[in-house]
Amino acid sequence: MTHRRIVITSLSLALVGLLGLSACGGSGEQAQQGAQGTPELPVRTLASSDFSVDNSYPAVIRGEDDAEIRPKVSGFITKVLVSEGQAVRPGQALFQLDDVTYRAAVNQAAASLSSAQAALSTAQLNERNSKELLAKNIISPSNYEEVANALSSAQAGVAVAKANLTAARENLSFCTVSSPVAGVVGSINYRVGNLVSPQSTQPLTQVSNIKQAFVYFSLSERELRAYTGGQVSGDLTTLFPKVRLTLADGSSYPEEGTVKGVSGVIDRTTGSVTLRVDFPNAAGQLRSGGVGTIHLPARTTAAILVPQSATVEILHKKFVYTLGSDGKVKFTEITVSPYDDGQSYTVTSGLKVGDRIVTAGTTTLREGMEIKALSEAEYAARQEAIQKQMMGGGAQRK
Image (cartoon, rainbow, N blue to C red; front, top):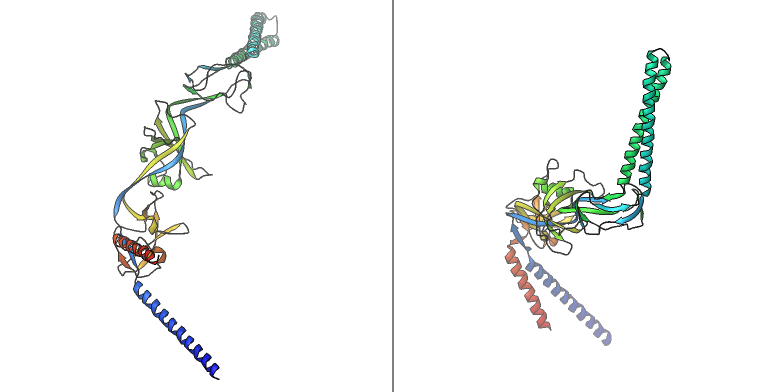
């Protein structure tokens, strides 16, 4: 009996101890909740300011005139008269094709013309004689018509022979492939002995006039509307600022460019619009076929800026928590410009100057929650103090 009484007494003491610990734990949680109270978060009163950011777009470089050089007739290349990178003038010979067949065609066409002209002379003589015989009623009108028709046929034969000779001479001239523009020679894709034709897959070469460089890049339709203020027709080039160009090696091109062309059609595949920027290139630093990066500045006056860290994104829509005069927050949708500097958004609708927004701690907020507003400096100072306290406590535990 004594042993059982001792066990029961021990169990009773253990239960009392557990209850005591539970009570102490409960009073500790209540004290922590009381210490937290109303959340204290940083709040910013919105003002307007000017905002500028350089937006970057990949670009390709083309010459003012990029002429693909292709033969107009088929033949074997007998001479390559230029080298890569050589400057050429309009009409300068670049390649020579084998012209033996074409010279023979010219000689044949010339002989055919001589034969046709002789036949015409005979037909003209017959027509004059027949006309005299018809006047003397020696031949019938039908006989004269036959002679006159023969004259017309001979005249047509001469015309055809002249056209054939012209075509043959032109084909012979095509055996010398010349540059249609002034510029520099690109890669030479065919050499002496290669058979080429107008249907060849690659051009013989390319001649680029690079005194003025054309640089092409693309904007989305939304970005285009942002730059043009919603205007999509008329001369849009005047609505764009001067632009800068970074070359493939990371260096900056010294000259500024001007937007001179905006495509009137949106690409169905990419949904983008192509723009052309003209850059002076007197030194020849830019080469056709090169790549770079266009820097297009976007400037907004009287802009309302909000920190990106203060926004919440849901289903591609952006929201902020605004603070009302009653100290309660409201989940507010905003729209922003497509251009940003990686830190702030430019608000286009949803907020106005004088509105107050919560700039940190938004993950803990809910619609209608009451908070205590701190300045951003006060909030930063408190966070720093808390961090130092935690670091000090950790050092003491060690």
